[in-house]
Image (cartoon, rainbow, N blue to C red; front, side, top):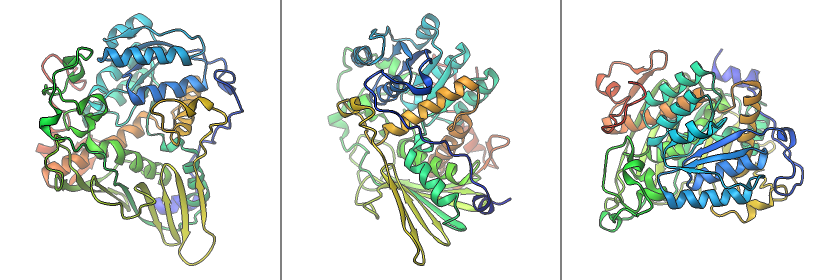
Length: 454
């Protein structure tokens, strides 16, 4: 059965969006009112708090520990959690995730660290018996992702990956109303993009600074290569460096690629070709590309990615988005809205995000919150909780997260090597390319052991 006939003949599973009743903080958790699990957060920065507070909103969980290499960030997060969780208790704080796991024995662990610190705490949390919410991309190299997937399957852990486009209510509507309904007809091409100016423009001489007293830079660096501290890397700017993340492809492409994979029922990528580099902003301390194109080949469909951190978006209405082109029309979609445009007349369809501020008024004043994204994160957390109860596979299961992560890492490898890479998903290697296969596991800094070797 081809992908096209599958799309025409049968709709893939779509989780129904949760409809919350009007509520005050901590007053009504719906079906999860008795879900009193012990929860820990590893990585207490911007998105760690955003994820954790969404879980606090949907179930009466108890936050029993926070972990971070930055004591100032850690203390502020603990103070905030005390004001938001039902018990009003300030959770204990830790510098060592292993001490947190050993002492508090959480049921659920959220991992919201930089990419280079995903694998080791994920493996430790799985070994401890916890279920996980693991931010995307699942790993900084492909072998790490394989190790996490294998460990989760061996232990029977439920692992939800933070590719929450799968749980975005208005995108679920677009999938149902347009794609599953066959309004696009045969789908011959997909494009994904990001034109946000999100790569730092700070030059090296302005970025270097002494390490702050509240930051353990050696611990923060962890298994990555040791580099001098700079004010861009921490906090929040680490994605501008190859040492700590997978750049804009690993940050933004993965969301839209995973959305297309979910909507169209695509499996593992078969071939990846990518080009790009630092073409415009050459003075920045950043070492990731400011321009990149990647082609992801799946069976009978190619998905083409473009990002530029300079200039204007070709479609200003959709600067970070996916586009599905069918014989009968086009679907445009992003985190704010979607539009179906038929080719020859017919009815246009559209939808947009619902912010849920009436149900969750605390969203209005939360610092750093992405109001248009948190409905999807709440739905993602509910899906995780329901699968923890029935021990099923969540909508963004670790295997799906591993597949989307691997495709993005292959794109960066292709760009660096200057050639296409053919992926053998069954045997977990790149066909006929020894040099590329040696890059499947990045060397760890002395004192740390790569999980594929452990």
